[in-house]
Length: 420
Image (cartoon, rainbow, N blue to C red; front, side, top):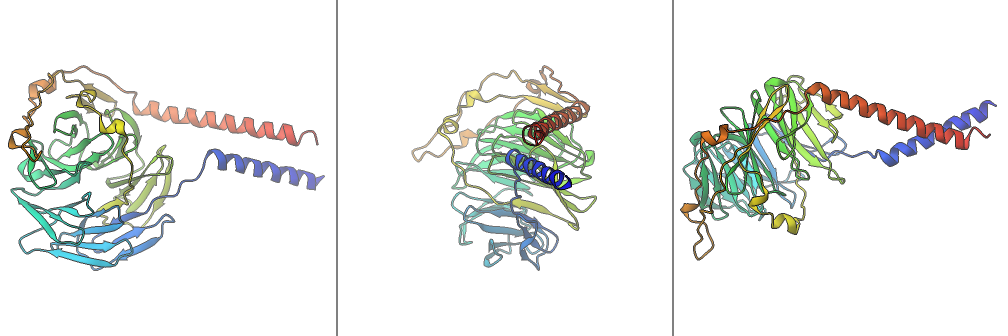
């Protein structure tokens, strides 16, 4: 009799395990590059160090190309290193006149753009200088678009600049941004303001779409390409904020104290996962698509930046032909602990001011006017549910899952074991 009970229990356990394996598949973490004060390491999918590069002094930025080559900016020594994914040094770029490399961005031709204290430099994939553009003051970040253009947060000059692939200035607007994130599927730029702690989004021509306020010393942003949503490390509020592509709040995570650096990756199901640095606990934390905590790794002190390896994706014809008329214009969102207020701007549509020369390059007339403050203030209000309602919905979902699992297990028992 006891053997029959044990056999029934084991069969029941195996059936339940197969059910969970089928409907709740495990997703492995993607490799992530981690820069500390004196070294850069690659954490593999099993959370072990696959590559480690030592003897560095203040690596401030990491970027990886699609051919799995890695560029590292070393601020203290004013150098930029080019490595293989296995840590083999390919080349070193150093110019005495170039000081304090702050940000890197991989170009479409496997090269790299570098933001220095007063210049922006383009290197080819062999590490040779192709061009140098001056006139910048402490640029903090840059990103490359699908067209090969580069957005630059020229923080010291309080402006946002776009250059084409030849280094010609196309757009210059008055925004003092410190962090940038580019949505390649929708051709939308996001940026964190260095002075008012607000989050902005822009169209490809530099027109402001959204302004989201209510953060307190936000440190970083990371974009999920599949759905255009954005994570914000709201450091002094000790929380992570997840926003949709139109600025609506999706999630809040309060399990992190002083969140700093962020990095995202997408699994095979196009679900977005988030790496974040918990400064207070000196930990590296991984969150899944439903904001559940997957892993928490200790002894990660003084982490300066994170970077996940890029994935090459095909762009659909619909995204290629997406017109500017389909995108929202001039909306403002105010984010607070109680909810989100969306402020909609009723500014008139702008005429195209870009003129092309014979080579198809935009002339200086393409510089866009700055949106007036009067237009930004006209608004209507929409309030999202507060944080408590979001927590209650999670408990409700957990209860539903529990009932479904219990019903399934009871059905398996009745069909296969009760008759025996």
